[in-house]
Amino acid sequence: MKTIISNMFVSLLLLVCWQMTAAANAADEQVKSIVPVSVDMRDHGYMLGDFISMQIRFTLPEPLVLDPLSVPLKGPINAWIDLHDIKVKQQKSSEGIDYEITYVWQVFSTVEKAQYIKLPQIVLQTLPIVSKPSQMEKPAYIFPAEQMIYLSPVLPELITDEKPKPLFYPPKFDDVTPFWLTIISLLLAIGLVIFWLWLHDKVTVWPRNPGPITQLLRQLSKRTLKTEFSLEDLHLINKALAASAKQSLYPDTLTRLYQHAPYLAEFSNEIELFFERSWRAAYVDALACKVISVKDTLSWIRHAGIKERLYRHRCRSQHHG
Image 1: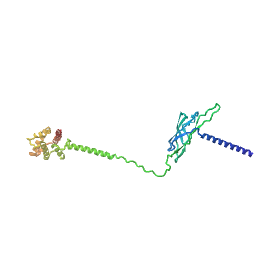
Image 2: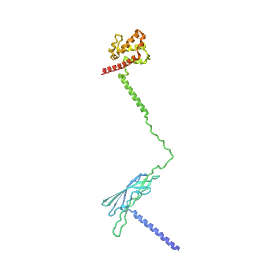
Image 3: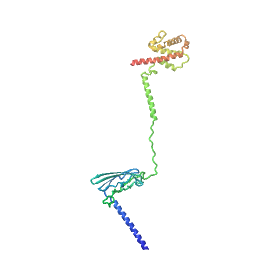
Image 4: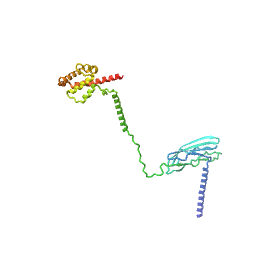
């Protein structure tokens, strides 16, 4: 009984050895490519998500023809790489048919350290050749040599506990200082323009060389006027009228005032009435000051001042023209 079991075990062992030898011989036959294959690709500088372009070229002599079913389809190949695209070009030549196949792989994995990774090896084959109706030869195999790529990690090799350096933000643009500089420059420019106009005596409301009536208005604005004029106030007004006439005024020479200051002719009634009452108050009766109306007198003096400035401005314009 033991002899029978021993014989069966030896027979089984021999059968397994024979199958392994046959598989090894078949693998050796498969490894041998029927034609030389050239490979063109870059083997370094790849990271997660990169595309790998690989071109293989070979020539099949007649009557061998590439089996289109042996060309792989696009899609996942293994856990870390996909076949993104594949293109097959063929062209007849004097030696047979030239083939150019372009594989485009995409990496979907990463490594902790930079290392070489083996690309999947895709074996192509030819169509079987029928020599006789009853015989069919086995197909021949075409495949490139094994290819490796240098895959780099995405993250740094070591992550230390060092704190990152503080982020220095760029300095903020100072918009307050330029704004105020602009305002000050604008005000300074306006002031210089006004000063230039005043220097050339072109500001009617504020003449550089004011006339007697305008000077009188400035003097009266500094005084506190009550319900009646004082003798000093009357003296200032008569002095301004005399300056306008460019001579001393008397009751019989009052008409010369309008010759030198024609702009005052419009106020002749008011001026003559005031001159008569002020002359009486100064030389006859001091109580006559109460008869002179402060409101009416200041009214015609203000209007006369405007007429004086316009008249002097017109005269300057004609002179420069």
